[in-house]
Length: 169
Ligand code: IDP
Ligand code: MG
Image (cartoon, protein in one colour):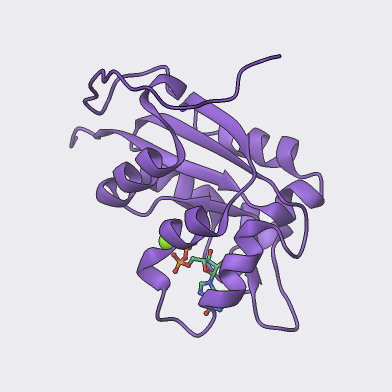
């Protein structure tokens, strides 16, 4: 049998998922994959981050609404970001997510079970998952810094910086 690749993939539980209290359900579904979670955090998504994340879709007619959706303007201003790691991670996670259009997604998939299309035509489909290894690398590096991830799959370096940052008072 062909050897399956060890991969990492970015998962986002989108603002509709958080608003509808679906975090537990989504994580339970994803746990069926037996993949490892190697990073996770709650993020307040800026316009820059949303636009960078969906940069490949910037010419689509639904892009402005998609950015507002990811920023949480229709739900809650937060997203849960995770990195899953393991054998065939990208396809395993995409399969449980289901098709992009929640009306077409298999009803046993996360998007089929919990997604909807709004009257404005936005696909509120609860979850994002990377489509291929290049996209996964770009997206993981966009959402996480090296020290946020407990596994070293991308090379990193140490730099000395004097930047202002917030610390506990
Ligand atoms: P994916 O999330 O299944 O990878 P993409 O084509 O990368 O699908 O689209 C990113 C997101 O943009 C989708 O998850 C969905 O929220 C939204 N989207 C994609 N296609 C449409 C569309 O035709 N109308 C409205 N929203 C869309
Ligand atoms: Mg995509």
